[in-house]
Each structure stands twice: as C-alpha cells, then as structure tokens.
Amino acid sequence: ENIREIVNGQQLPQFIGKKVSIVGLVTNVNSNCITFDITTTDSKPIKVNLKKPYNDLLEGYVEVHGTAQNNVIICDEVIQFSDAASKEFDVAAHNTLCKLLHSVPELWRTEKY
Image (cartoon, rainbow, N blue to C red; front, side, top):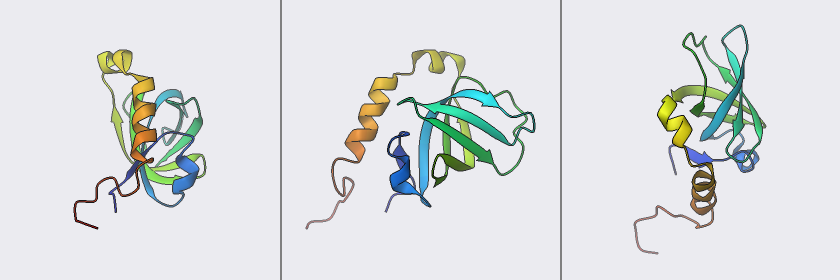
C-alpha cells in the first residue's frame, strides 16, 4: 500500500479517508490562517483544513499532503512551490501522471504473481 496516493480533483472522491497528495493553485486564504482554497490541476475547487495556523504567505502552486474528505483535505503538510516552479508547472503533464498512476493495478508491485 502506498504512503499516500497522488491524485487530482476528479480522483479525490475515490480516496475518502485515505492519505493523498494533491497539487493546486491557491485561490483564497482564510483570515484565520487555518483554511485555504485551491483549484486543482484539473480545475476542481478544494478546501484545505490545516491542523495549526500557517503564518507564511501562501500563493501560487502548492502540494498538499493529508487525508481526503469529499472536497476537503485535512492537511498534514503543505509544500509551497517557488515562484519559478509555479510559473513553469506543467498542469497537463501532472494530470497525465495522475491518470497513469491509477490506470495500472498494483503499479509498484515488485514480486512475481
């Protein structure tokens, strides 16, 4: 079993209650610094709930690690992309990666069947 599944917004409902990694563009940060919104690479709106306030500036693309709950992520970790990485991030390639990762059953299995 994977430590966390790499998903996009469309795939998120398949992983309710499981650990996921999702990339999105920050669209809104609540004034309490404990929730923020992202738009995923496939244009789905997602709310991110932090376990403690995040006091640094959140903008551009972020990778969120946490537990999926419908269109909400209970966040364990936020990885902020640099300005350059946000500008150069290939959304289409990331969506292709997400689709490929979930199109092959037991992709990472290393033992013989």
